[in-house]
Image (cartoon, rainbow, N blue to C red):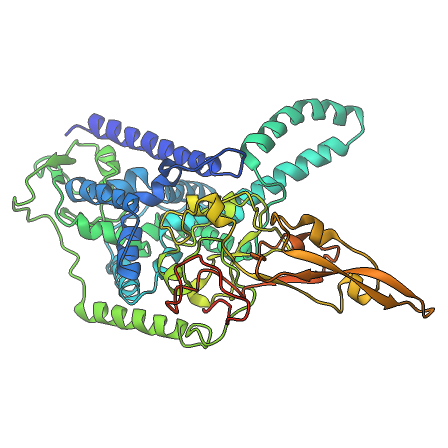
Length: 550
């Protein structure tokens, strides 16, 4: 194969990478809360093409939405062509390639051979540990899955940060009353309005736990200064899964020995470190099929060719994984899952009052066996009330969604979180059923509620209650003021038979530090099926034990 052709393929690959990255960001931005908008499978395309999510969900939940089987197409492509997904399509891989170029441009270093290292087997042991966890119901692979990690980082940190910069920058320009400021307003307002109406979505979007998520994302990119595509070589569990599928691909590297002078320019340019110095040694499981090696070869001695999977190929090296290390990884996965479930919360013995799941969420154990913590439901929430958990659901449930009513309520006319969930951890409930699904129960703190504590009327919570026949009602009572005179005050009450726990009462309460009415996880519909007493989504009566086991 000629060097010119290798260069052409490599250039085509770069264009495909950039296009896939832009497509990812375009689809991500398109997921937003706007009137009349409904998500389609295309908005979750990259998650649906991720075979690691398919395998982990099947193992953990023993069921998976039909649409997630699209990931088998990625597996088939990998079996035939090698890790094309990693080298050409994966948006996280493209970001790592760009980060490596930028970091080595800022901090130049001598170019050295990128030979295969035994440490590259580490990602296969990481994968083994995660899959063992999944087999026992622990869906924790989502923490390190590259597509989920990128989606979550965009939803919780990058997108809100960009939104904050756009809003604050536009406000600063708008408030400048100088001549220059007036001129800048004319220039900045049209693009800002376009962003506000078609890109930004919920104003002032902010999330708890954005710092650790951003730190993990930035840390993975900075590691590219240590080794090019460090994440892809040593950590990525999806890359490991695809590496296993690519152990003997149809598309193979070919070296013309008569033309090769052993300069190892191909090895120096290989981002996956798929060789080991000698040109006739090649690890297809590590090769990203990027064609950089063919582009770097000045003697046209290197390229790719098609061969039968059964054809002998002495140059192909196998991973030769250590059985002892695989057993250790499996034991580590079991021990890790055991530590996550050692607490009373994990055993369902106690309930966390602040763990309010979105309407349509499955029972907590099944929810955790499906939820990817991808953050799409957080981004699409029209009030910004869905937030990533920190410790409310234990370590196993970190970064999964929960409702924080003080930040934003569950919009009575919205069911987007269930429609956008790729694994149906949040079921796509019809709007009429969603409006009857109980996610919590409101209760008054009479030591702070204005009618109770101060003898003054305050009807804010009752006025905003979205239930047609009102879950909050008032009772007129006589109270004695400091002069000893009686006066009539309207005190609010909660009808537990009607309250669905949407949280709008807590959100609009005049107290912003600690609202006088709080919604807790008691009375949830989703746990009614655990006792076998009634079908899912049928409300639990107030006298029955409620709460969120987790």
